[in-house]
Image (tube, rainbow, N blue to C red):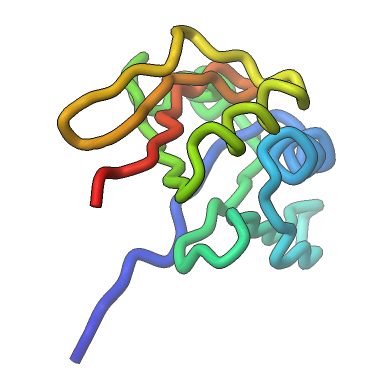
Length: 129
């Protein structure tokens, strides 16, 4: 028997703006956009080849709206791995992704922190072999 992490919910304010951001700015693929009852949609996006995806969930009340951009309490909550840091960093920079620091080399790999359009913090990381 095996298990795997398949989805992580990310609360957003607008479905279409979120799809555009994650697919255009971050280079993710739109895996699914299925209409549900009550105006909801089941939307999955993921980096190409990833086995784990983001489920984009539209905020529907004050509590959920308050969580947009702060889903990890101000800490880095998401980690985007790459096999070519320089190329990925350059492409994301060219698409307007906001990096919060200069890239740095750590014992675990090359890393830089960036924010998505909502303020969630991410690590772009090329792990050391």
